[in-house]
Image (tube, rainbow, N blue to C red):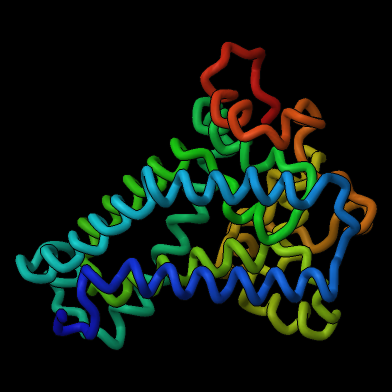
Length: 274
């Protein structure tokens, strides 16, 4: 057990239990109060999306996330990183790291849309023809690998406490499930949450087939970054029930087949539809 209240052996269990609880709760809520009618077979989509979640956990996410958290322990022991150099107290370093982490993820997300080689991997996430909690698990392993390397660099640069790193990972996983959900929030709850959080109605616009709409609302946790940097869109051109989700060239089997989606970025293609 570390001085921060958890060990490296327990960090996986903490993250997995939090992930499982959030996924189960949100899945129940979106069944009871759906926002949109789903177009594709839910069982087939969930099998595909869960397969990507399992692949990423087994191949990339668990191992690299373990190394990222382990590096924060080492950075604190060795006094590496800005937080350790200026001796920033935990009461400031934990929330500050969570904010800077979320800002980094925001700009990483924008980079994945702006840079064609990265978009080829990221667009698999956008190719889902429906939008629900399982979409929050649908990322290409190469995208997760790149994201993990960025996180690793951020930890080495800042030297945050391990607790902050663990919390940021838990929040990112939870928010990805929440803001990709098909849960219909009440207008009052959605409005209240929008004062600081990304809600499903906010992020759903980002998954629109419209180029103008999927190049906005990049945030995952906090809504501030989209508003500060001018990428916030409050409502889609069409209603949330009527707007088209996904990518035009990914229809039918192409947006559901696990093997097709996994191999798609490596194929020679025409210029990507950014």
